[in-house]
Length: 325
Image: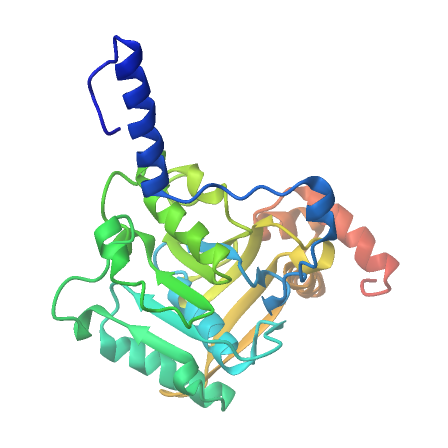
């Protein structure tokens, strides 16, 4: 506000109004508003999918999980798939796009190892489509995406289609992550990128209650929220094995949004493969296996940590399909 003095005369009021109008003009252009008839006639192209079915162009998404489940494995695979026009866990990238991967905590050596493993597995080379920003290569601090001055330093990355933020805890350092107000600046930055035609994938930690850690306001503007969780029968020796749950799925549903179970199978020191299937298919295979070993429904329910009624329904389904005697 250009003048803190409260006007008491007509002349002062006129000056006040004039100064206020000038300030509004100097601060920002007027908002653009379309009449409904004009808006409906506009030729607005449909949003294309960068990674079908869950990451659209101009999409804002989050993947979160507890420590050690496989968030960075997941995010790096997504980034390479997008940069090469490849696929990951059955999700396909129709065309290569440019990706900026901002990693806030992993040592460069570890990140390089993982990327070499992905390249060996896929046989695809992202080339200049994938750019990496890591703490080890900076002369100062990594960007703080909750600080406007720090965000200004990212403005020159105008030619990327997707920015991966790995992770919120290390790259959004200003404020209290439990307070909605602390997310306001990062949210505004993400919405601005969306308006410019770009997408953002945030990587985050789970909280004690199992959901994403901190304020739930983060999810308000997101198209997709992906939760990675260990299966109920997970053992530490399983390594990177997790279920993928779509907790928010704007623009897709049904079979596309069903949970899947993924497992990283190590082949040697430098190579691995991903095995994956629909979560329901995985559960049915376990039930068939345990039934074949002679366990009854109650024993199977106890073994899998689920209700007996759940096992009963799945038994009926398997018998109807002729997959269980």
